[in-house]
Amino acid sequence: MTDNRASSDAAASTQAEVSEEIQQIAKAYERDAPSGPDGVETQPRLDYPPYRSSVLRHPTKDLHHADPEGIELWAPAFGHQDVDPLEADLTIQHRGEPVGERMVVTGRVLDGDGRPVRHQLVEIWQANAGGRYIHKRDQHPAAIDPNFTGVGRCLTDTDGTYSFTTIKPGPYPWKNHRNAWRPAHIHFSLFGTEFTQRMVTQMYFPGDPLFALDPIYQAITDQRARDRLVATYDHDVTRPEWSTGYRWDIVLTGAHHTPREDEVEA
Amino acid sequence: MPPGHPDAIRLHGRVLDGAGNPVPDALIEIWQADPAGRVVREPGSLHRDGFTFTGWGRCGTDNTGHYSFTTLRPGPTAPGAAAYVAVTVFARGLLNRLFTRAYLPAEESVLAADPLLSSVDPARRGTLVAAADEHGFAFDIRLQGEDETVFLTYPRH
Image 1 (cartoon, each protein chain N blue to C red):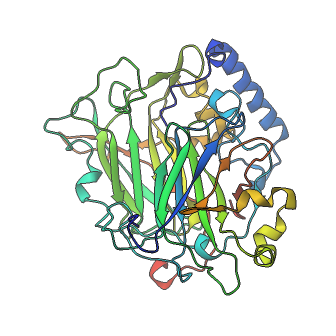
Image 2 (image 1 turned 180 degrees about the vertical axis):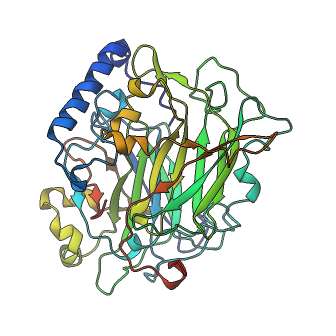
């Protein structure tokens, strides 16, 4: 899912054309969004034409409302046989040190009711410091770093906290339109305490100049919801003579089932 | 489950876009009860030991948009309920994951009594029911178009 292929006619659009589409959708949202929490779009739109690859891949019929039942009220279990603690450090997977800014990203995974999601799997994948993925479809002519694969995993602790040591990823070009560049980001894959909370999202870095230009970031039409994808620089996470530090908390949707005793905070 | 397991079945299918073309970069995850209808709480999905059934799996589609799981037949999680596999779809161009269910084919009366299936337009209900084939079940996922799969959203989401 490295977003670097698109249809040939889409590649003909300019950034100005795509930016205009983004702005028209944003204006319509601001004009029409009902006030109150139910009117706020906290999730990306599936139908978002500025992202060209979405055109033939989004459902055109309304999603069907379902009451979760049976298996959907539970999430799969992962344990220490699934995840080695060393997988949380993406800078030690090879013989040498990877190129780039070493950083720690940490935060908590919470459900919509503020309860920590404990002992659950968090997976990340990302480009290297030069904006290059290891993925074979990534043809961006930036250097592959032999010391960086860009894939990590960990389990949250009893407080719902995750932590990764990695390299700050670079922005990279993709072929959504001419001169399209993705803001630097880290993909996060998350599980909650039930199936319905499954989520894949992206974490961004503060102040990225590419935010306004990026149809994937802008597919979340609500500014405050979008802002929640941006990590915060945290000097308390920064380690002396070693790495910078960022904090990013993730709030999943609410759980439907009554929390089990081992899930309730003392 | 390894294909050699005596009760192993195959759950497979294709992921197709609105033009009917295969989606070669989708990722499908399944989550299901065991044959007795129990929710499995066993870890080990990422490092299989070849024996433990975990109820969860992940498979990318190939160049023809095809995915394939070797699993066990899920049992109904309540007496008389229709058995299904919960499915999550991810893909490039899909800005948010999609949820659906792959029901096992069953007597019409069982499917008709299912709370979810009975709430779906009868013309589209069939998109949620897998078809029996030689080794198990086939379940195609159409992201868009005439026979678009019914995708689910849950309250509070």
